[in-house]
Amino acid sequence: MDGEGATAAARSDARWTIGSRALAWSAGLALALVGAILASATLGPVGIEYGVVARVILDAFPSLSFAVPETARTIVMDLRLPRITLAAIVGFALGASGTVMQGFFRNPMADPSIIGVSTGAATGAVAWIVLPIATPFALGLQGAAFAGALIAAFGVYLIATEGGRTPVATLLLAGVAVQTFLGAVISYLLINAGESLERVTYWLMGHLHNAGWDDVVTTLPVALVVFVVLVAYTRDLNVLLLGENEAHSLGIEVERSKRVLLALSSVLTAGAVAVSGVIGFVGLVVPHVMRLLVGPDHRILLPTSALAGSVFLVAADTLARSGPAELPVGIVTAAVGAPFFLYLLRRREVHAL
Image (tube, rainbow, N blue to C red; front, side, top):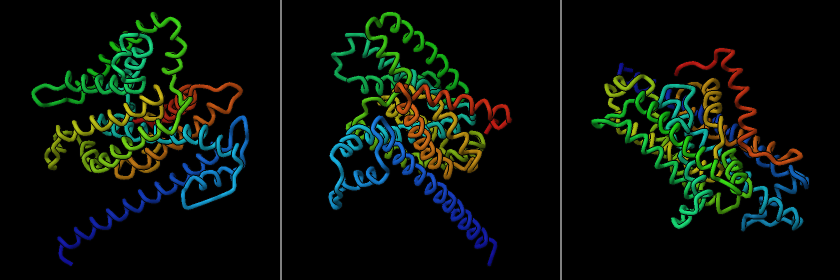
């Protein structure tokens, strides 16, 4: 075999190995997610056996029919499963967008909120709750949060862009400045929240309370479409880890790739935050842990981090609603994620990408 043929064969073997690893890890995490969903659906004030939960879910398919108690059907299909499914979608979105942000900024401390997306969503939601003037726009709470997130993200991008270039350092600093300003706006609104203060505070803590199938229907298509496009940009993410100059020399349209990655990550995060409030540490800890397990190749890291984010948030939300009093899930993710991240810091496992 000549040199060119040997090189082609080596590349083919490498792609096969990467594909096999990605498939194996993804399949394992998908099974873990199914197990977490089933386990979560059995838990609550009214305990339901695994077999009953499985029959209720299978009975929802038109071609299948199982005899299940009507009470169990109502609890699982109308109350628990919409919330569990939404937790899986939000965790999926935050895990994926956190992976993109850490790769984009080449910093394991980056997360989906680094360019102001979460703070923008919080500002939009709080304004909608507190200010009567926000009502005529007919956005609804989730629409206001989504709009606020995108306005903040693209505002940061416009501030940081000059002469058609968007330096990463400038983008980061612009994000910090915009987050600080929006934080001041939120604080002002909280002072004037009045009777709405409890509702605002609960939303800011991150929650999946009262989730319904309509939330799933509006969030799932956005998450899947954006994720598929992000998968197509995993090579660009890998090359950007080498630095912008090196990426350009390897044929990557750096500024175009940066715009696409920022836009997609912002949309993904905005869609998640709009339905769940501000849930921290999922997009920070999960991608970092998965990077330690599977390596930095985004062709493997992106899908595994997304699925791991789903498993993590489903488990966290199960804990949040299983205690004597239901907690906002953001409290649970922070209580679990922060100590674990400190543990990684102590072990010097957090390092530049």
